[in-house]
Image (tube, rainbow, N blue to C red; front, side, top):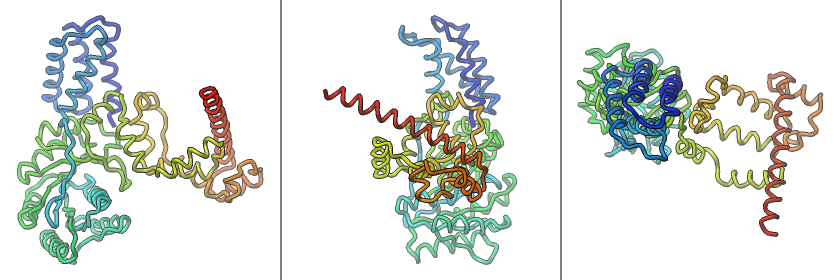
Length: 437
C-alpha cells in the first residue's frame, strides 16, 4: 500500500532539487503534482485541495535556513500536514468497566470477524479475560469462522442456536458476568451496504449492552466508498473509532488519508495481513514517514522486541563471535522474522529500502520452503553442514517437497553467509586487539 503515492510524491519533490530557494513558481509546480498524487490515491478532492493550499501557505511564508534545501523543507512541511490530516496522535482501545464491552461493526467483507479475533488476542496478552461473541447470525459460517479463530488463540466464543443477534449479545453479557470475563467483544453482522435494518440492529445492541467502545471496521481497498460508509454509519451509531483493514492489499491509501477529516473520529488500529498477529496501533506520524519513503524504524524495533527472545539473541551473538552459526540457528531466525509479519511489511519499515526494491517479487512462501528444507535435515546435518553430500541432498529434497536445486541453492547461500560471518568475526577481533594493545 502507498507505493504509488510514495513514488508520485517523491517525483513531485524532484522539482525543487537544485533550486536555491522556495519561490511561488516552484512551489506551485510541486504542489500541482502533490495534489495530483493525492487524487490518484483516491483522497477526497476537497481534502486534497485544502491540504495543498495549507502546504503552499506554510512554504511561502517560511524563511528557508541556509542549511536546509528547499526540497527538504517541502518534505518536512508535507510530513507535518499528513500527520495533522490523519489525526496527530494515536488512540488505542482502552477497556473500562467490568466487563468492558467492545462492539465491532462494519460492512460485509470488511474483515470484522478476523479483526475481532485479532483484538481479542491482543487484549488477552495484556492479561484481559476475553469473551468473543458471535452476533453475526446471517452470514453463512460466520459463527464457525469466529469459533475457529477463537480456538487458535484459546479464547471462548459465545453463541446461541437462535438467529437473534440482540439476544446473543445480551446473553453473552450475562454469561461473561457469571464466568468472570472482564472483556466482551461482540462481532455484529455486516451488509453489502449500509441499510436501515443493519443500523437498527446495531443500535438495539448498543442500547441494551451499553458498550464501552464501538469500533467501525472499514476495508481500505474500497477507497472513498469506505469513507462514505463510515460517515453514514457514524450519523446513526456514533462510534468511537475506526479500524482500517487490508492495508497489505492493493489499496491506494485514500481512505487512510481522508477518513479522519471526513468523519471526525480517530483511526485506532490498522490490520495488514491474515495472521492474528497482523494488527498495529495507528500512529499518524509513523505512517506519514512511510508514505514519504522515510520508513518506520520505531515500529520495526518494536516488532523485533516482541518477536525476538533476549536470551536467544545473546546466545546467537556468542555463536556469531565464535563462528558457530548453524542451520538450527538459521531456522530460529526465520521463525522470529515470520512472527514480525510479512516480508513486504518489514521491508516497508526500513528507511530508504522499501522504495529501492518495490519492484522485487517478495514472496513469503520462500521462507516456508527454507523451513521445510531445514526441517528435513537430521540434527547432525544441521549442526555440521559440510557432511551434506549428494545422496543426503536428494533425500532432503524429497522429504521437503522441493528440488535438489533448491537445496543446493540454500546450502550455497548458507556457506556464503558463514564465510561473511567469519570475516566479520576476524575483523572484530583485530579491532579489539588494536584497541587494547
